[in-house]
Image 1 (cartoon, rainbow over the protein chains, first blue to last red):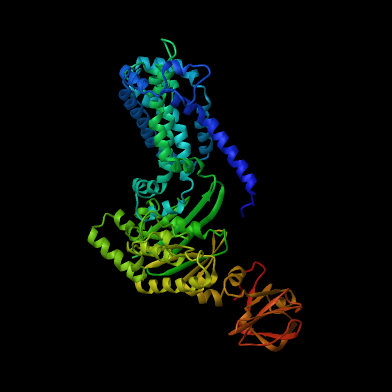
Image 2: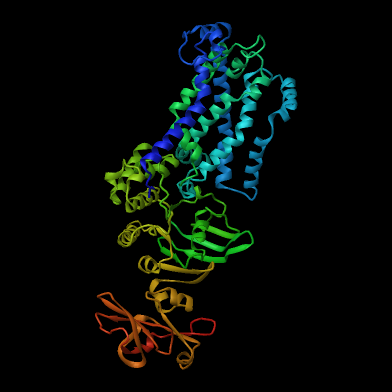
Length: 276
Length: 332
């Protein structure tokens, strides 16, 4: 039964929620606003909020100076590529762990997750050297490999949690109906797991899109995604706030739009297993 | 054809032996019911036959061909699950056609078989719905439809009626029996409900702790139970078991008498009526203070009126008394 909540309490909670939401969103809003200012207005003291001369000049400069589209394509290839390959590896792994668990399954899962606790910088040197010797530095394929590997534990965990909710009976029924392992997975498991797979896919694209440590350290120019594109505006000629903001806005816009349209799917993906 | 032979079939989960080595033959066309209390291994035994669990020892043969190492898909068996286990993302039509699709059957034959099964099971109007839009009884029919289209060597039912309400259960019980009459295919049916076992089976296999206690026709088990466990498990209400002097008097460690084999009105047993249950066709009395057992249950035909606390005299039909020795085995 729902608890009775008085109107004043409701109003107060709504106000608090809005304040927190605005506080969280404010840096993004500020970035977007700054991207429409001139460099002078951008560093004005006291800062100007809305009443300034709006200009698109920063976007034009950024577009002129660097190849936005090239970086954008690199981001798409790297994030989608690493997620798709990750899924291809994680689906069989999660299937095995969810439906034919062994004595060590729990430990394997924990071990996989523990790799996410390792500070990436701790393995930067060996990975950098391996990439250098194998000619993977500044290549998209190199980034796809490294992002697949760092996100794999999350993909496996999410799919595992999701698969566990699918009744074993149904898979056994498929087996009795003459399905081979492949048809069992393709015709029964995957269609039933579509919502879970979709949210895993979305979340991992976002994670890979935003990943900055490896993308900044392992690429220079050819394979540089949007993270490197933003970073190129913070150095070496000093900070140009307005241009940096324009670059940032252009970099986050695609993922923000994608996230907005798939928020239902994402919330479901992040909370599944929590409530039966 | 569907003759299934189990030879020394055994199942262990780790160190625990769930089913000790066991032999059983199921003849072609037979309706066999595995019955027993929960945890007796009846579902495990069915899953061993299905191939969903691996045996720890022994052999399974289907129509004389070794099947022990065959995957479930290759055993030509169809199974109906307690949870129905329908594919929620497929329509009824696709659910029923799934085994045919897996077998690579051509479209025309597939459609023909699905439509025939739907007709037999009254599902024609529901073919384009999804399982989520059907009632429990309809879902169960879809599960059966999915099993019959393949024309398997045998059907395996794992407590298929447990999720249905009482009225529907009686109806489905009849439908499954009629299906067996028509198809004459071997059926193996697992239940904990002895009424289902008695009404449907050609042959009942009573299991306890993985052991087969007795195999026989429903009336064999009712008339000549091999031991006290079978005697008390088969029949409803269950058999009264009396030990002590009354049993010793008849050269037995314990005697058993079914509620319907005790006459009311006169006789050497005397007690007080506790609760009476009026079923219309019969009246059940729970009789206390007889000095024989805590409660003696009696089934009297028709409407018989005794109030709670009334004195009652009972007389067992002597030729219907079962005698058991100190190990609980039947004395001939």
